[in-house]
Length: 240
Image 1: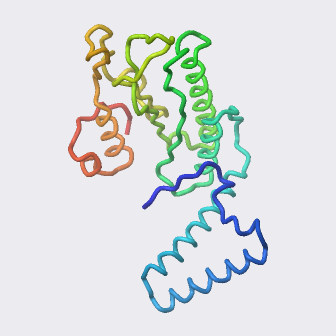
Image 2 (image 1 turned 60 degrees about the vertical axis):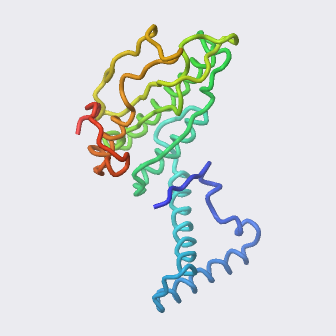
Image 3 (image 1 turned 180 degrees about the vertical axis):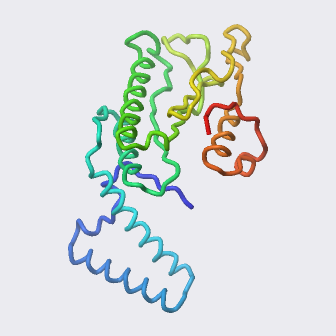
């Protein structure tokens, strides 16, 4: 199944209805006629595929927008990540069949002004903390907190040494955070050395694919080897 990517629920709808109500009715009529014709003839060609795709998109659009229009049970922070997690929380509350939701939170490429209480890194971590905290308050109010495991990861790490702009440049090893009542709290690998470096970069002490493998096998009930290409030992980070 192909994933669906939307910036917000209002953008995930057919825009023809905003142009003309007559056009919207004509579109709806044609879709229904084509769907009925394909059902009667048993056609399974590209034409039928496009009709089914249009119908599925319309149905999922209606469900998502209806879910998001429902007021959240808690107040989320007015941040980009807060708005994304609020939308995810609403869809979970609406019992959408989606197994995996993905949100993104950028600006951690801190080449300048990284450190200190007023630095960009502290500000970003505060936004992350506030948004995830609101998300799990929402899930708890729904009674869904035990059903949702959240994984936070970065596409790259930072170097150990500071650069000339009060920040750090691209590095290798990076932390991964897991949230949820099923997570075993604590550090699940060794702290990397700050002196035994790989040309200025940290040496990772746990392979991220060990965490992926455990979540795939024990949480999503699939076979991690089929996804990752080989088997990995689990870090035992979640209770199942």
